[in-house]
Structures are given as structure tokens and as C-alpha cells.
Image (cartoon, rainbow, N blue to C red; front, side, top):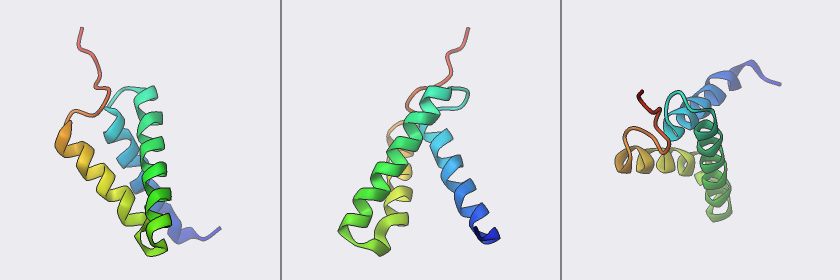
Length: 75
């Protein structure tokens, strides 16, 4: 455990929530899976590319669906 890893983990959590859609717990789970899989694929390409691949996946989803994959339903 190192105290400096907190902000990095917080950024991943934020990206997972935004990808999934605010107010949707299953969407957050899906967002976390997307971030994790993209980081694993990035690590297979080049270990230095692991973190960047997660951020790229976040940006791609944000461009395609700004409201998230599973937005909160109004009603």
C-alpha cells in the first residue's frame, strides 16, 4: 500500500461512473469492466500503454454517448 495511489484509483472510479451513467449502479459496474478490459488490452500491447488505454476508452465512450451507456431514467 502506498498513499499516493489514491488519486489514481479515484480517477478510475470517476471514469467508471461517467461511462456507466450517473445514478445507475449496474452501469457503474459495466463502466468498471470496460476500463479494466481496456487496460488489460493496453498492457498486452505495451505495459506502458495500460493506463492510457483506459483513458482512451473513457474518452471514446464520452464522445459516442455523453450521457453514459446506461443513463438515469427520468420519471
